Amino acid sequence: MSWLTRLNDAQYAMLQRIRHREALEAGSREGTASDFSHLRGKRQALVVTPQLRGHSV
Image 1 (cartoon, rainbow, N blue to C red):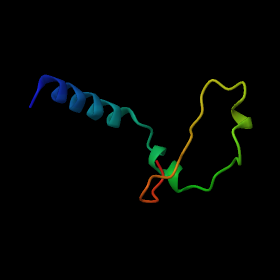
Image 2 (tube, rainbow, N blue to C red):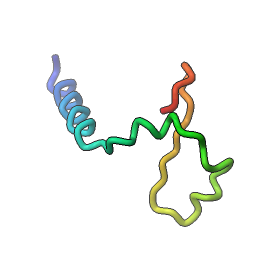
Image 3 (spheres, rainbow, N blue to C red):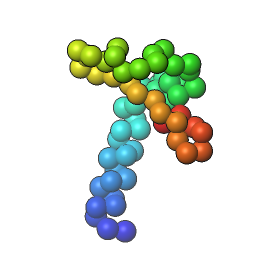
Image 4 (cartoon, rainbow, N blue to C red):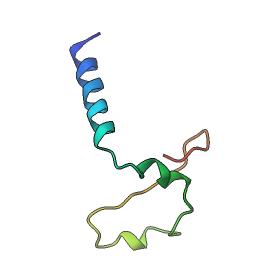
C-alpha cells in the first residue's frame, strides 16, 4: 500500500469521526427548494443530489 493511499485512508477516517450525526439523514429528507436562488448571498449550503443507483449523496 503506497503512502498516498495510507494518507488518504487516514484523512477519510478523520473526516468520518468529525461528521455531524445527522449528516447521513439529509439524503433521506424531502427537499426544501426547487432551485438554487435560495443560495444567493449564503456562505455555506448543503446540496444533496441523487447518485446513479438512486441513493442521495
